[in-house]
Image (cartoon, rainbow, N blue to C red; front, side, top):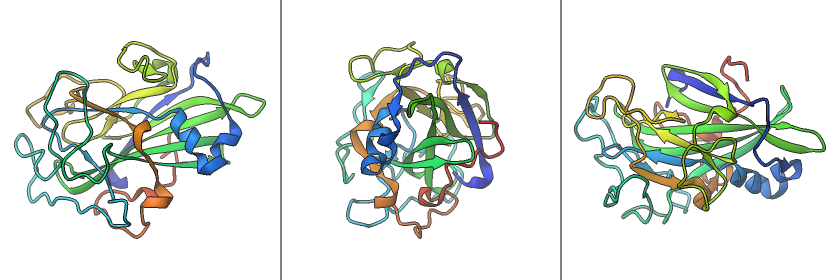
Length: 268
């Protein structure tokens, strides 16, 4: 998404911290990969959407997005994007895709300490070859960790890039979270370590809840469903190691150049 149209959904810390705090050393050891793994989201996508892709091929080459000559409303939304696996019901796995360079579609991450509020933040970004109106699309969520004392850090909140709206809540208000493979197919669990997040069908905006309206139209709110899913944990690729800051994504923002400490005017 372009920064011009960026808005933020904000979910902040509840009065009781139930997530598993992590040691502050994990944000710097090995560039912070263990911290990134600690809150890695599960992503949901709706059938018929342009599905997620790798943003690069693992050999230093940028993925070429797909031109969108006219706004795509109902037809051809998936044109030029990875082929959807055979649907096997809700939560169909999204992996081993023809033409993709990795068996698991990457989520790109980076970690930063934000001195303004003394937080650690982890960015999780996903690339799409297009959305309904433009070539190349980046969407992301940012998890903020707050110091709970003794250099132990708990999940304070979640920023999600969206289109045209924002909301404020608590980590404990995320409807569905999980701790690992033993509970990732179970819904309704709050205050666990990993959020379940939805990409909307046309814009790919990020939300923590589904939306059943407008499945086959262009009206808002944009449709969201758990038709397909992939867990970012299985292929986390560090932004600084894989994405060239000079790569041009058109209206989409290159994550290498994104300041994840910027709250976009929100109280966070």
